[in-house]
Image (cartoon, rainbow, N blue to C red; front, side, top):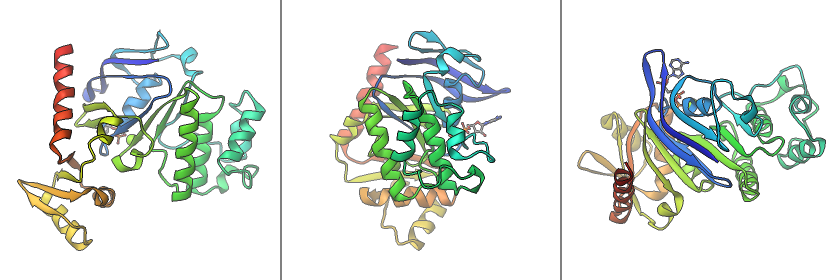
Length: 292
Ligand SMILES: Nc1ncnc2c1ncn2[C@@H]1O[C@H](COP(=O)(O)OP(=O)(O)O)[C@@H](O)[C@H]1O
Ligand SMILES: [Mg+2]
């Protein structure tokens, strides 16, 4: 459905993404994971024809360029902050893009927005705006839905609801590309994962590879291990320190990532400790090399 090949994306002279290739197939839920500044938003904007790039992107066989209006009709997107007209109600915002009233009303109900959908959008909380942005992306049942950090500002209940809706749409063939700086946030929903680091895709594998491994610990490195050690200690997060890396139990990884994110300490490595997983990565990389 979507094929990106050898993408290089620049801002002026600075390279934002180096030589990225990936595909997205119908019904697939692809997690795009990477620390802040890794280039997640940049990739998403590029898929919408909003940046200059070299390489090729095709969607249903059509080339995506800087003016891909025909393709865009089949793609729904929420990038950074949702584009919402503050003086219109939520419903009026949706109606601007909706092609089907029933679809619109169904979405409003499913997202639990009915009680406030007729109020002006400027009165909405961050979570409500985020939900409205997600509704805008899901309108008209697109073939591909691009969601940039969709769980931002959502409470646990809303997160679970969104996850369920994503699953349902995917079961009907809609593909998703969803970004997050927290791996664990998307673990429950994605069917494959692309990990971005230092402007490059460092891993691109189906999620069942992760699931079959059942690692018990993760190995974690950051740009500042001293500060990280202090941070984990003061927050009573259990860890061992081996060979310049933290070894953390799998159930503590979500909290560790949150802490690092809150204190803006970048992750440089996060990998399951079990050998089988490393073997899986090695296999993926070897296959890639053979294909090149
Ligand atoms: N409009 C822009 N002009 C110049 N540099 C940019 C612009 N947008 C993003 N960047 C830079 O590109 C890199 C990737 O940014 P971004 O795609 O927003 O990362 P992410 O979404 O993963 O946090 C960062 O170094 C960021 O500073
Ligand atoms: Mg971003």
